[in-house]
Image 1 (cartoon, rainbow, N blue to C red):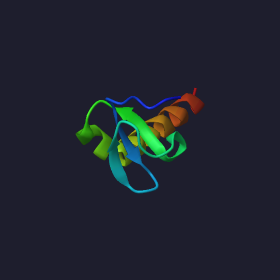
Image 2 (image 1 turned 90 degrees about the vertical axis):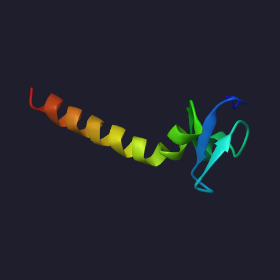
Image 3 (image 1 turned 45 degrees about the vertical axis):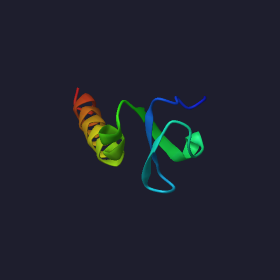
Amino acid sequence: MASDPNAWYYCLTHQTVEHGVGCRGGDRMGPYPDEATAQRALELARERTKAEDKADKEWGKR
């Protein structure tokens, strides 16, 4: 999948935000709509994982 030249990404290898084409896709998170959101990529991933873990536990109680 080609990078969106207008989108923002977070590079896991370099731990930096990238705009448009950058490191290979497997090393990046995104796309994100803006630089600030890309900067929060790891935090957002942790929040989403925590929410999904909670949903899994709730589902398992049914």
